[in-house]
Length: 283
Image (cartoon, rainbow, N blue to C red; front, top):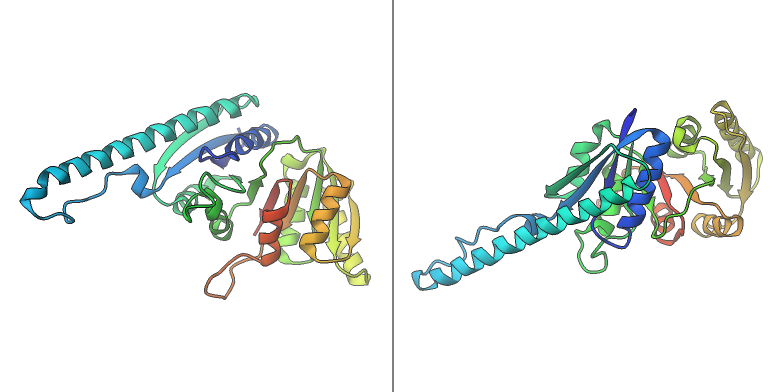
């Protein structure tokens, strides 16, 4: 094995897709898979209730609450191990055998940040098990992970589909240039049909940027097409993906914002939300 990818699973409808894409990626990159299921601290560990009920008359209730809390933690951990077992089986079905499951308790972003140093890619589902209800589950952590990660992030859509055609969004920015170079050099993209697209008004500068991107890909063995389409980036890219049947979008994510909220760029966020194919994000 030449590297490692991180796959994050939470038992949601997207976890199966995450595992299938992780298996496909690991096979092409000859990488091992570090498989993570992260429990929130309230799920994974017994809380300290000793300071909440002081009176001796309530000691029995305190004991019952502590026991109930411990049972919940044990159940959450048992469920986590079951999710990891199922996930491992799905990845093994793709022909990958070097898989190491990890059950962690804590913050998902902290977990990724501490484990990504020797990884080549992070694979995560677009939405999580409780994305509509709880702010700290996988889906709502996606933006935090993209923002914090130094490693490229592969955002899986709900249904796995073998990748044959790749669309690279190019705007001339640093992260977009990194995305082109990543596609050119990474064995994940070897033999796949590549198209580089810029959303904007055709002019000499835009055309030259596309030709530079094409040359970079050619140096990596890709005979890439280039396109210029007009419109709003999120809408235009989505329409192009639908119309021409692309299977994967590669694009640069915006870096850290000076705004206090520090959200990733609005175009990136919208593309993740609406795109029906997986998205690889480069910082």
